[in-house]
Length: 581
Image 1 (tube, one colour):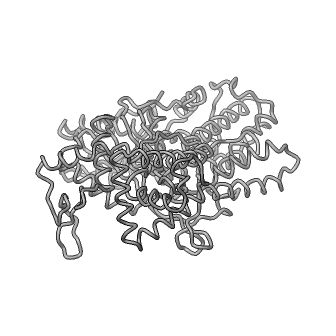
Image 2: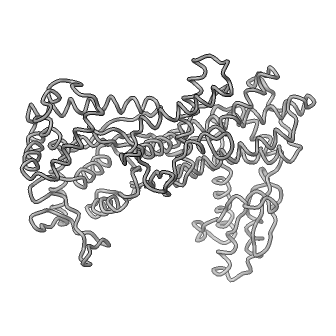
Image 3: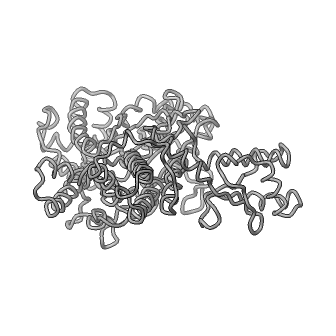
């Protein structure tokens, strides 16, 4: 098993810099990157520029001393210096061939697991009870799942948490309203359909906003629930269970694994948050509420902004729950990296929660907390994606539509296939297309939702990737090839398209490392798109089944490694490949 070429090179050049100029330079950035232009080689080390001022030497001379101390001859041709001290490196063909052979023999494509695994919590999806999952939950769910898959593949211990909204004022409001209009729903399971429950929730919210007496009744119902009142608790459990089953249908369709730990779980720890913050001296009373005044956050008047931890009526809020959750995840779950995947509108909230937790000394130096924000899903009109009537689009209907459209496309291309085959392909393509369209965007941007674009067979889409994979399986079937029994020692790279493809295959580990570190799944999508392009160019320019025996085996191996890389890469995005389409 090997680490990525890039991480290996960084270590080698760091050692070379320390050997050339002394141990005080051991932490100098080696400035190693993949070359942007192939004519300069495959990788570059640009450290000489950063060292020239400190060492009072010309960058070319600094570069020459680094080269004299770096050991890369097992992987690269002799390094060369260009321009203002850039060190260029070109991979040896023999190294490429050896690495490809290792990849082909390995179910992990010879990618090593991390030496020191983290205990990671990925907090994602997080729908609200008594509401349907909508298109906004799509982003959190699939971005979170992809990040979790990649970290798990690297060997980290990942706890996937679903922080569902199952507590607070919304329940008091709904329970109070149902007592009046549909009391059966509070004592009998599934007395009303989830869609009707959503409508009743809306009506309850409207009443809550307009009727002071109802608002008071709702708050009393929350107090009753928090105190463990039998009737309120039974009603709460029935509503949660009904919503949970609806959520699970979507998670099953999307192949998402999650462990539910809702807001209610932390209810018992909320008073400890207040006690802890009081003891650290951070807590202040302001108009009857208990708060922490934040550094770097101000209100309209330029005064420090308070984060309210306990309201004047003694109630708690989202911030209290999130502080309790963070404290629990560090102390009880022993997490060393905590990742929150929510919309960009919550960036300020998490910055505030993290600041309070740091100032309270809850977050040790060894623990990393990260908010992973994402933008909105937009309609063709450039506004938030909604139905014609202005409602938020239910995620269930969106996924069903994707499958229906994919099915219609299969009917036109392969009408003779069995019903079972057509439905299986429709589900893989439809759901894969929706996931890929989302993950291939820079997550911090808004993007326009378009079924036509995401289901297209050309461009950076799931169908394009899936076809590249299917193409290799088709080669295997046509030539009656058993890829598992190919002689990997026969890999010989002679033509430019073979070499270009081989070099890109070796960068797969780098793409995975980049996503694990920066948490942008679109980096992996871009890698897979370029891989599909490079494979198609190779396939068009280099005959495979028609080549003579030695070239044929070598090229079949390249096809096989490409297919394995596409399959694993798409799996890390939560997308299932097909053997036929």
